[in-house]
Length: 273
Image (cartoon, rainbow, N blue to C red; front, side):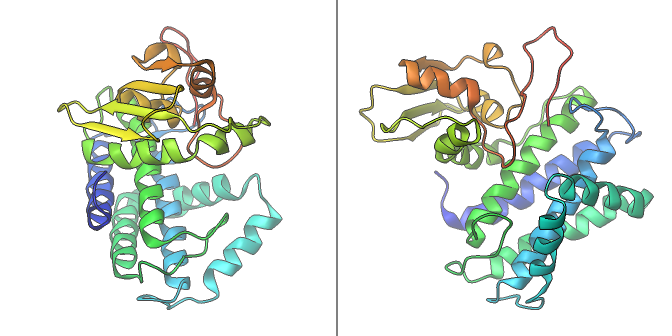
């Protein structure tokens, strides 16, 4: 795993890479694989979430500490509309920003990286779920930015080249195993799994005790795409050993919220977000 000192650089690089892909698309009304979401919706969602994360970083004391009540107010709004709060916020950004959306996102993501890097690494920052330390929030932002970046890259008909994001996405994918069971109303297995992944450059990334009877092996990229539900299980080269590990790959989900529908296998028209 990369060191904690690299996570903020990885967030900056991943965000800039996704922005470069989006900015190369001349028409942001181009649809993405997420039903009803254009490139503009994807960018607005990332912008809104980066701005909200910045408020959280500024509410958490430490280096920022400029908005102690700001995030509490956002939580109250979320409680009032738990199912529509995020999408409405993103739509509001899209409507407000117009042609200035690229600049607004650039400003938000740069400010967020700076705030997280300057924050006290041991002080948890508020969030809609459990509080997160700055490193963890940065890792979460890498995951979401990369996942939505895949959607944007799909709209452009290209591959997203952001290998620096993958170890962080994979770590979240592994650590959210039990969450995927819970959100699907299932009981997680008591036994931890082993996950052994290989990056495109041959680097091996492993999680787990190392001697589990339940394991997943295969390409790092495939695992990251699967846990973000950007690929169907059948379209990966992942191998599961053990029934529990095989079942996990059918429900794996590293993002918060209701169970996602995932991507349908190649040749179908369904999508996800």
